[in-house]
Amino acid sequence: MGVILEVKNLTKKYGGLTAVNDFSFEIKRGEFVGLIGPNGAGKTTVFNLISGFETPTSGRIRFDGVDITGWKPFKIVNQGIARTFQLVRSFKFLSLLDNISVPSLSKRGKEVSRKLGTDQYASSILASVGLVDKARIPPIILPHGDLRKLQIGKAIGTNPELLLLDEPFSGLSYEEKLVITDLIKRLHDDGVTIFITGHVLRELMALVPRVIAMHMGKFIVEGPPKEVANNKIVLEAYLGRGEAFA
Amino acid sequence: MEKPFLVMEKAKKKIKIHKFSEKVKGVPSYLKDWALTFRGGVTILCLVVFFLFPLITQNVFYLQVIILCLIYSIFAGSWDLLAGYTGKVSFGHAIFFGISAYAYSAFTKFNNFSWWLSLIIGIIYALVLGFLIGIVCLRLKGPYLALGTMTIGLLFQNLFKMGPLKPLLWGDEGIPNVPTLSPNSVVVYYTILIIMVISFIIMIQITKSDMGTIFKSIRDDETGSEASGINTTKYKIIAFMISAAFAGLAGGFFAMYNRSVNPLIYQPLYSFMVLIMTALGGIATISGSILGAFTWVILSQILEELHTLDIAANPILDAFTTPAFVFSIMLILIIRFVSEGILSKALEKLKEGWDILLGR
Image 1 (cartoon, rainbow over the protein chains, first blue to last red):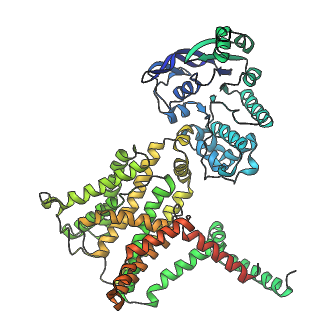
Image 2: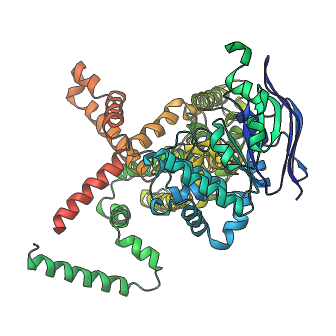
Image 3: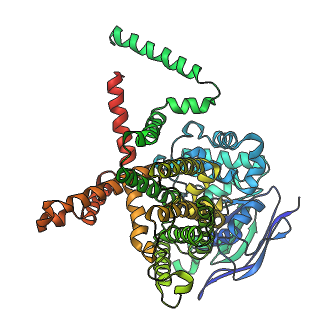
């Protein structure tokens, strides 16, 4: 079980605002890790930095022994890190099948899809996320829950080793959450390392064996969910300082 | 309940169609299937009309009008390939049109190259220019890209006009008396028609290929495409180059048709013209631009004819029949009522009528 993702002293500054401040952590291959923190803690920024959509002010990111700091997003995807977005993104006017075809046409996706043929590969992914009966429909008319599934499907299409899920449960009903949870668990069982964010603690706590907590861009604590949930600083970050209420 | 007679008719037709497809040997089955669809049928019918047109009339004027339609079709199609499929709106497509027209004129006139060789050289000029402008301009997004390309178009127009550069770029008068490929209009017509059909097949196949899917993904969500592991910069530049190449092809033919070329070829009018044609026919349809180009050219010809008549004396009628006025009104109506373009709407209506006719 080697280290798959190693983040060291990651810092991102926007002018005078420090969104991520000297953030370091490690994820081992095959792990299932959560990243928690209240709104505005910098979770999405950390994801943007790992996936290359933003370049860090300082610090290094190593994936599978390769330094990927400052790489372009598509290169990072082809290295094996796929991500989903907090706000759903889709190719609005393409059919779901074509939506999944795009990642399977990437350099990394092609290595897998070539054997099966793009269409066959894409429809097998659609089947695994439970959208195969809607293959010819464009996402513009789909409900939010299906779009969340599609997002995960698009990420799977690139054949990732590490999957970054940014708030995959936001805006979903209870039943839809169960479906997505099941999907993520199956992916983990298939050997994909999963790094997931959320600001609703209860959902994540039930899912992941290890969480990393952050607040105001800073690393606070990591460990099993129960311990982290009882950590004084984490509670303060979520609920405010005890003295304030006194 | 259906009338027994109609059922019989239908059964007969089915047998006929079956026999027809059996008879045509050596044609791949997917081509047969396509020919039997409604769209395929309409396309083949249009092709037959195009190929038989010179048999109906040998009038040079009519042939010239249709030749211009065909040239503009390629030009509009090239713009549609870029704007409709990758969502990169270029307001400077006249650059590629113009550079190729200049290259064609110069090589045929001064170097005595054959028409096809000059045409290929023109396309290569457009390709290289597409690559260079693509690298610079594709960093710009949305309206800035449109403005950037338009500015480069204006820059080219003024560059080619400049007095000091006259020995190099032929100045204000441009290149007159460009050789044509044949004095016979029918030969020119067929040559351009065949090349136009081939280029449209290529363009449509590109949009249907994997590359076309990637282009469309860039149009719908560039960030998402990047997050899917697609090198969007590379594909945007490829799209720009392909589009520039076809615009260059049209430009070479235009120089051949016009028999001369001058800096006015870079004017924004030519860039906006393709936009209007494509919007008329339907953006992101490729074949819609053919319909758009025909509407544009033929309607402008009719309006021009009107001006030679007596009504031109009436200032109000004169104002209402100027091409700019008519096309502006048309464009507004189309954007308001058929934003998907007239082609798909027309095909839809035609299919409905056809189905009623067959009693389906």
